[in-house]
Image (cartoon, rainbow, N blue to C red; front, side, top):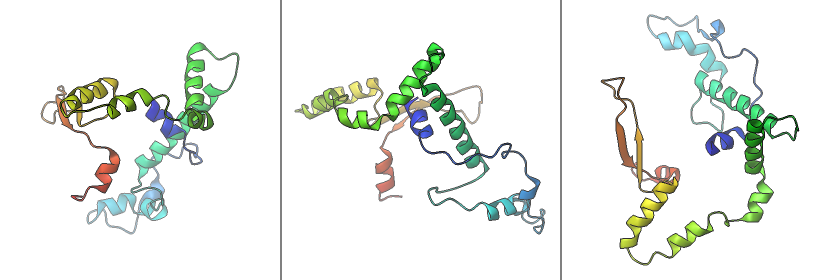
Length: 179
């Protein structure tokens, strides 16, 4: 939920009604579909929609994602309005969203919300305590050394096997020398 709130908190681009549908004008009629079907099907769209400076890639699904973010943002903003006629669920969602957007309040509280966890980590004295702390953080939902999720079995679509793996913060991936 927090990720959804964080994503929708960004200022969304102006959405165009009915902009996300098959667009005959995206076709590059100068391209031969038998030679380069992608250029034929998407060439004009690609030419008219350069990758935005704040993105690493851009496509029709990116537009859809941005539109969905804008819709979710509007829903959350409406739920956060102080309307006495809000139902209990909308009030709870709106209050949660408003609390997440209260940057001054968050800054004023500082690290107080996570200070007990930081103290637990700071008070580790021996390597032997590390495994217990990692287990504690995993149970609390904090990403540590390991990641455990499920994914589609490519040979049996009805099966979703468990997939353990290494978990590294996004920054570590970006700064990694092996990439």
